[in-house]
Length: 487
Picture: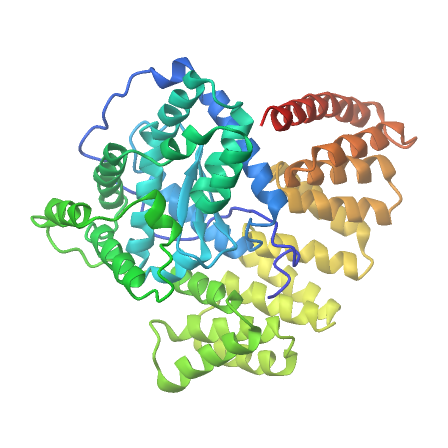
């Protein structure tokens, strides 16, 4: 697929997309759960546990490297989270490079969505219904309560439990192996949310979905779609989502019952929903098969959004390095569709990947004036500058962006390349260390920070910042090693 930052499938981002008006508040107050679980697992501890799981996920390569998809999921998810009155949690939504049907919530408000589930959802409200369900698991402290019970049992360390939870949400077979390896066989039966948790997440999720302005009936329709997809699966293998969120006729009936008296609400899907689904489809299978899929859809006019279908075709052609045809199809798309940041980013990537670096830089400069917060553009512009050996303007641009996104691993990686080209070793190693830390390679992060300290070109302020960060990373690395030994 296009650059999308790198081909290693390991980048996250967030940016603002226009998805609609601000959500209304939920009319029914959420239950007061008390602080029983927080007595054992504080919000800070839960966040730390989730961060540990996320480091492992990034390190595994499962984190889908697509700023466009992750940005969209974050905007959609934040819209839902914003519909919860008094919400005190930070959420991060991300895509998983897996076309199996699954979604999961991790400790600390991290919510993952498999590419396969993104494609199964036929409307934005259906996708929002899944995210609302997962957000409700977090807002109702289901994960903390589950971990609380495991902590009291004293079966495994917190970090080992994070790995087991991560595996159970995304791959139950792997989770079983982890549990057996750690001699904690009792955990597997308790990793899945209880039936009462599922029903509560359905009920609260429906309120969140409706308050955020989506079609409340979509939750039940997605459950029915998931059941049909399961019956149509010839392999007989149950999707991971059904293992962790069993869809029963009773749950579907309850979901339908909750909305039967509600007035019909027609909710138009955003353009971004269609574009993102087309982009995810362009990743599936071989590039030739993806191109054929979009060609057939356009020929037979079987699509929900023509512009998104043509966008997917360009993305698939770019993935297959058919630059000449991708350029022709892009022109058709630009002539028939209003200016959009995802189209601008795709156009820039086509120029960049086909070796037209200076035209790519000009395209990115023009696009950033219109869409300064679109992260795919923010990533690709300094990449183009670095390829054109313009390291100084690249690092100046990156320094500004890192003020806005200080924890963005890919921006740190680009900055490390830029400072290396300028022979500023302290800054190079500092930013490379931050990138390694984001990736989950804490040993590499510590080594890079030590190299930064030992460089002879850092000023007092920079060396002070690096020294403080090194102490934190060393402590985290020792904690990680202890957790792995315990697990």
